[in-house]
Amino acid sequence: MSSSSTSSSTVFKNPNFFKVDLEGNVYCHHDVIAVIRVVGLKSVRQGQQFYDALIG
Image (cartoon, rainbow, N blue to C red; front, side):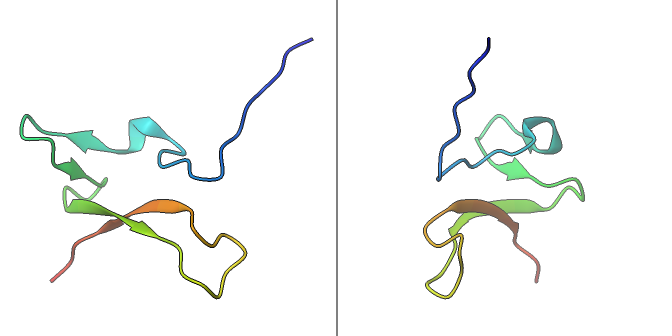
């Protein structure tokens, strides 16, 4: 029997999806710098963290 643990604030759903450079910057699959954001108030995922690409 195996058990699994889930966290409501998991940042990486698929850690192989992101790249990290020597300065600690995280890049999405489009080679764009990504930042951590938190889901807002009007969502069932409120408070969970996710990466969002900085575009523009």
